[in-house]
Amino acid sequence: MKAKNSDGKKVIIDVRRPEEFEKGHAKDSINIPFNEFPLRLEEIKKFKKPLVVVCGGGKRHVKAFEFLHENGVESEKGGSWKDVDKDA
Image 1 (cartoon, rainbow, N blue to C red):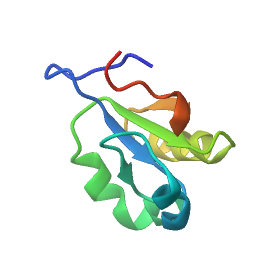
Image 2: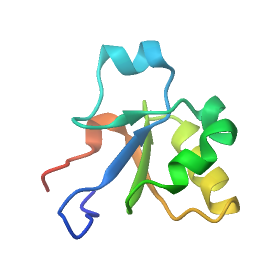
Image 3: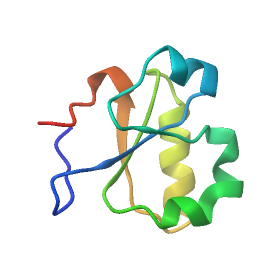
């Protein structure tokens, strides 16, 4: 995963539950559980691009990506948070 903003950063949104996030997450990632996406859509739209959605390696990041796409928000599927390399 090498997508970056002009400032060299990407916004990683971890869509797992808070208790999962607390056990481990990518450096500087933001925890927005997938079930909160509808309520926090306007907040998500204000983040710098690119957005990368991650989870524990299952399907939630795909659902988050699809939700964002359906609502006009560009993002990338990042897979597992363990595979995201912020400094690549």
